[in-house]
Image (cartoon, rainbow, N blue to C red; front, side, top):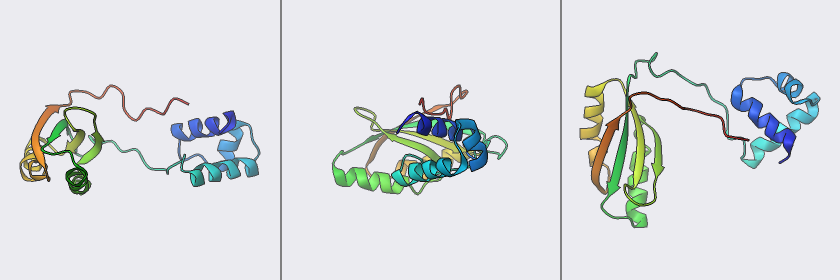
Length: 150
């Protein structure tokens, strides 16, 4: 990957809806080489896809919490069972497995506090192998969806 590929990625991180023509102009390439580079970045797995960025508040999803999860057991079977069940919860918008304790950090978004409580009581607490859940409310998102430093 060279400087031009990094410039292509930087521009697409800013605006994934750029046409190939606009992108080529911004990075100083003609249309065909720019298109080939974008295709190669997609095929190599560096460029994973394109999607719309939505405002959760405008969609009525006004409650955000971070949930720390500690598992009872850390063997492969227990971890896989937990992770497979977690994937089925659309309110979990980000999940990270951590070193040490706790084992996971989940970012959960719901409509409001009662919806979070229902999710917590009915779904999160009954995930396989959960020993302890600890949650904290998000007061304000200071940095989010920041482009990767290229």
